Length: 99
Image 1 (tube, rainbow, N blue to C red):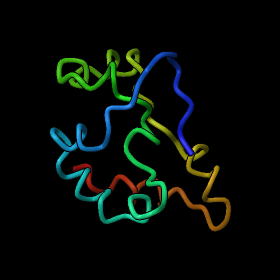
Image 2: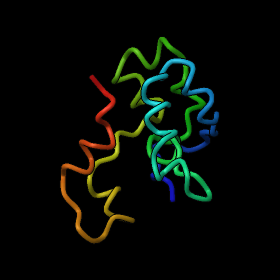
Image 3: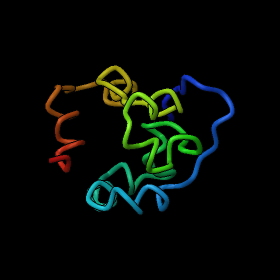
């Protein structure tokens, strides 16, 4: 399961690369069922391959990050797996680590 990216030719950089800047988010994900499944549903499964948006200068500019392939998935993407008992609170809980 992976989000459909709006840009072709992107490559995955791995969750460890995301951890460098997103320590709190990585720690939160590491304890989740998404991290524990096989294969894991990691950062790039939901946000798209990070090869072009991983640079700090790009990530600090939301419009540049989106143009470089960053995806901000919504409830429709989550509902591809979470078919029963879905609530918008699940999406909020998944990102509860954001201040």
